[in-house]
Picture 1 (cartoon, rainbow, N blue to C red):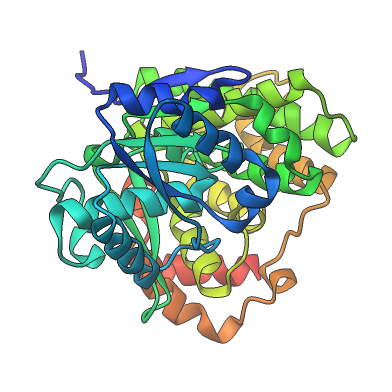
Picture 2 (cartoon, rainbow, N blue to C red):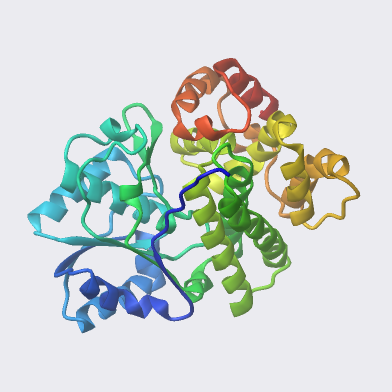
Length: 380
């Protein structure tokens, strides 16, 4: 039998768990917490809840709220300086993937030094990081449970994928109530990102029986929830399902890694500053078509998880691309890169960056530079 590992933070899931931040910070030995967030979280009011919880538990804190939607290496350098100058001893990230990825990157630099670009090899972190607590305010990134941090190399306009078990937060807090302040459109973009996480981790070369359980559940939950959000439905039950889909997908991809859709999305969203979920919607059907022959059984299972009735493995795998594309049409998402104003002349440069992305290693089918360029042209 195959041997596999599965890594995870301590997970706190449920309504009003945002108020437990201070308790967990104290338990981890924190005295002065570096709180990482962004403008959107400030405006939502959730940051105030976190700060109140820290204060009630006798903790000092410093707020770094300058994280951009695609955090850049020079921003991380600034955050690291603030962390050190304020004598902080722990980090608490509040937000979606951007603040959480940024907090991980700051923790890496203040403990290991150097440049972020020096840590793009898997598990290249050698010294322990300060404790990290992550509070997710969206249902999309999965960063709150993952060993990934995605940071833009600003001079190269290339997203760096840093992967290490050291980056997994000590505590991950999932309060479904926090999704109440998101618009339906934001929920759809985030949900498509969750679905893409789940599909890619399910067929990844690194998939295991354990990651498969989380991935297939995330596909079912996200597909069903996305249809309800598009239909105008919002409820505590729906928020719970979306939050659970995000958690399941995050645990799956953190351990199984991802694939070509994410390798490509990282670079396009980073270069053009486009939400990842929108890019995923364009790319995923094309990537699935490229990968289909590598695992028809699993792609058939995906079709069924998306809510389609299938008669056989062949029937399911033959219909998987249409099932995905049909869902995205129902959600009124773009289906061409030209719709996103992606410049065709930049494809050779983008392809060079895509080939360097670590996610491509786990893609179920080998992909070379020419394959990437050809896929980008088909998606245009």
